[in-house]
Image (cartoon, rainbow, N blue to C red; front, side, top):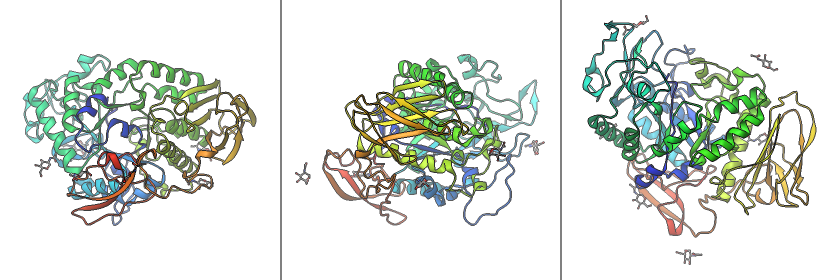
Length: 566
Ligand SMILES: *[C@@H]1O[C@H](CO)[C@@H](O)[C@H](O)[C@H]1NC(C)=O
Ligand SMILES: *[C@@H]1O[C@H](CO)[C@@H](O)[C@H](O)[C@H]1NC(C)=O
Ligand SMILES: *[C@@H]1O[C@H](CO)[C@@H](O)[C@H](O)[C@H]1NC(C)=O
Ligand SMILES: *[C@@H]1O[C@H](CO)[C@@H](O)[C@H](O)[C@H]1NC(C)=O
Ligand SMILES: *[C@@H]1O[C@H](CO)[C@@H](O)[C@H](O)[C@H]1NC(C)=O
Ligand SMILES: *[C@@H]1O[C@H](CO)[C@@H](O)[C@H](O)[C@H]1NC(C)=O
């Protein structure tokens, strides 16, 4: 429901991260699948009624657990779920709180999605697969249905129903946001005052700060959460965000809903990472409206203005934006946008259903249940997502400098954008050629300069065709029907699981320089300390409900620190 989310900056957080919590760098190496719990998967034994898009439709945490193979086979290494706390129970003129953005009691879970055990189990199942759990949190306001009731224009709120902020003293006095870009107005006034009022927390108040800190610690600890997305980051006090992140002790991803690069990047001081809203409009423009140079230009701007591009999360769709297919009905364009989504700099975030080319435009229609697609693994976009995530994971496994190195622009014209990503001097280089010609695009040869070291043989991973770089390092790319092209050196393909090369068999968690050891550890219930990672391909063995024994492959010297394996 909230149109906003924020990304966090990580430096502050990294230094105070709880022992064992994944670092900002580890998060930067992940690829995140965004789930709206109510609309992702129903529990196996649940009813099969059609979904009213304004109401709860039956998706649950148990449903997510049942479908983790689907997510993992897509190559994702982290899952972000919608808010988990108890929301207002009412049906309102704007529907029910199926999305989770109308919190009523922070100390209780939303029982529509399952029990505390289900949530802990989801976390545990993800960790067994070496995946991270990110939970979306609403810490800017609480919610109450008012349906138009008011006294002198001010909604009548029963404060006692809001937990733990159960008194008017914890809130900003009533006013409605009138200027979304004015920091004072948008931080101190209420997001919504009609139908569902969202009383705005007094985030500069010491009591509110310490209460939210205590809650953050409890939430993260009780459910072994690896990262938090902070909804409506732009609407909160800087200090509040910082102290929240410190208390949570995990990576925080802020949602600052604006295209303004400076305005977004300023928040890198207060949160670990940020959704890359400045990149979003040019991305859509590039792949739906023919403006490829505009995208290349925005990438350059962000590289120069943002302290750390690796902690910005790239997306093409989310629950607040129109789905790509609602803007342009062309699978090939969607494939290019997806390729950019996964292979450009930063943390890829893909919204459930993007891999199925779902069409909804505005909420709630961009939140249609994924089960309507039968989780079709034959969808061409499913294949593209899986292939490109697999390639990115492979590149990171081979070279940890892959992620921190900014991509280089190799070539741009009105319909094409070619980049190379990989550390200088390393053979691990991904050359991507994005096109916006669409499925009616012609067949032609494009010469891309500076692709690889002279004479390098490379594989185009979406078709498995091969090319060889000439003596100047150029490659000739066979462009056809608007398809994206992605090249990787042939020599580095073994272990990738792509184009006939076998998947890596063992769970290696580092660049291979170190000493690998296998060891076993036992973690208390809910106490996974994130040292038990596995590859995306082979599951670690698991123990009983109460304790998990996991065979860990650790880099000897750094035992207890390694948790970035992909
Ligand atoms: C609010 O209005 C909706 C739609 O008119 C109605 O169904 C609902 O019962 C009302 N809820 C409350 C709490 O008044
Ligand atoms: C975490 O668990 C403790 C112990 O059961 C409980 O007191 C606390 O309220 C929980 N916190 C949250 C946010 O769920
Ligand atoms: C989208 O394109 C496909 C294939 O060209 C066509 O079958 C379908 O009807 C189109 N859908 C919409 C909503 O335009
Ligand atoms: C993608 O499709 C190709 C060609 O059909 C197939 O060989 C490959 O295994 C698929 N990849 C994934 C990850 O599903
Ligand atoms: C690897 O670890 C083993 C056992 O601790 C040790 O004997 C060996 O010297 C180490 N090898 C390297 C290359 O560090
Ligand atoms: C975390 O991992 C370390 C090192 O592997 C281990 O010694 C410790 O017991 C673990 N802690 C918990 C709470 O599982």
